[in-house]
Length: 617
Picture (cartoon, rainbow, N blue to C red):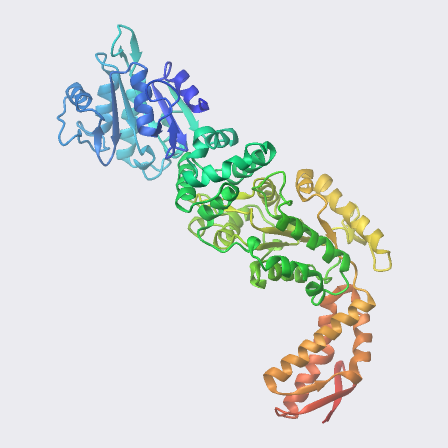
C-alpha cells in the first residue's frame, strides 16, 4: 500500500524546487519499493532513500544545532567543496543566521549551482524561528535568502545519467504555517504535502498476515489462532474493534502496542485491552470488575432509594449501562463512548441525582460523575475552555477543562447540564466525541471517551416560545406521562433539527432520550420522608439530639404539595424554610444539649416566619 503523501512526493518532486512536509513527521513509514521495500524508516531515511533513488547525487541534512550532515562521508565532502566550506567531525558547521558562511547563504549557493544535483533537507524547520508572524531582522534576512535560493534554484545532472534534475529544498515542519507565509505563498516553485496519520485501512493492514503473528508471544499465538481460523466473523469483529480503538495512532505507536502485547503475554481475544493499557497506563478497569454485575443487578433498587417516582426513567437508564457492560453499546464504533443518555423533563425531578447514582453504581464513587454547567459555556470561544486554547492564545498552558478531566480519569460519567445553553461551537465538538470517542486539546493531548458515559440534561420541551419570545407551558403535571414524554421528545427533535440545525447530533443520541416524569404526590411524600430521615440522622450523629417529626409531617407535606412546580428542589426549599430554619433557632435559643429527645409539634406560620413547638422527651 503506497501512501498518499508518497504519491504526491513522486509527482511534485519532479516539477517543484521546494517541498514543505507537515503533519505526522515523527512517525515510521514502510518503504514501498526498491531494495528497502517493506523496511520501516523514519522520515529522514525515507526521504534520503527516495531522493537517491530518484537520481540525486547528494542528499544533505541541515538543522540549526548540528549544521549540515550526510549519511555518507563522501556526500558531505562533495557538499563542503561545492559551497567552499570545510567538514569537521562529520558536519559542516553553520548557524541559522544571514552571514556570509551561515546556513541560508550556503543553501542558496548549493541550490543555484549547476554541477551536481542536490537535495537539502531542513530538519526541525519549525524551530528555526520563534514566531513566523513576528520575525526579528535577522530572521527576516534568513528567510529572504532562502526565498532567493528557491527563485534561483538550478537544474543539475543526475548521478548516473546525462539528464538534468532540479535542485531541491525540503522543509520538515510540524505544520506549514510555522514558516513565514510570505516565503511560500504565490510561489509556484513550492508545494506543501501533508503526512496524515494512518487511516483505518492502513491500521487494519498493519495487523494482517505476518504482522499479526508478531503481535503476540509465539506460544500464545500458536495456542489461540487456530480457534479463529473457522470463525471469520469473530476474527473480523476483533480487527474492527482494534482499528476503531486505535484511531489517531501512529505506526510507531502500533509498533509499541505490538511490543506491549508480547511483553505482557496478551492473548488474542484480549487484543483491545492493550490499547487501554497503552492509553491509560495500568489502571483497574471498572467495566471488567467482577462486582459490577452484582451492583448493576441491584441498581434499580439502589437508585430508587435516591430518585423517587421515576421508575421508567431508571429502567431505561440502566438498560444503557447494561448494553455497555455487555459490549453492545458501541456496535458501530468501538471508539465511541460506552453509552449516551439525554435526560429531559421538568426541573427538580432527579436528573442530576440519577447521574450521580449511576456513577456510584458503575465506578464505585459518586465523584466519578464530572459535571459541567453549560450555562457557563454560552459564548463564542467557550469551546476553548472545555477543549483547550490553541498555541499562543490565553489559557493554552492550562489545557481544556473537559479534556483534562478525561485524561485524569477516563472512567467517568460526564454530565453536561442544560446542554441547550451551550455555544454552537461546542455542539460541533460533541458531534466528534459521540462519533469518534476522542478529542485532542490545544496542546496536542488526546483524550479518549471510549470508557465514559456521557449524559446530557435539558429542560427542552417543558415550555415553548411564541414569535414574540414569550414562554408558554408545553406540558403540565395534569397530563398523562406518555403524553408528556411524546411532547418533550418532539420538542427536543425540533430543537436539534430546526432551531440548532444539527440533526446529526440527535441521530448520535438515538433512542436514549429519557424523559423524567413530574413529581407525583406519592413521590413527593417519599422525597420528603427521605429528607426528614437524613436530617434526623445527621442531627443525632453531629449533635447527639434525637428529633421526632411525626406530629408535623402532615402540615409539612401539605406545604410541599403546594410547591411541586419546582419538583424535588421545591420540596427541599420548603423543608429548609419550614423545618430546618425554625428547628435551628430552637436548638440555639433554648440551648438544647446532646442527649435531648425533641418531639416537634404545632408547625405554623407567624409574622412571615415558620415556628413550631417542641416537648423534651
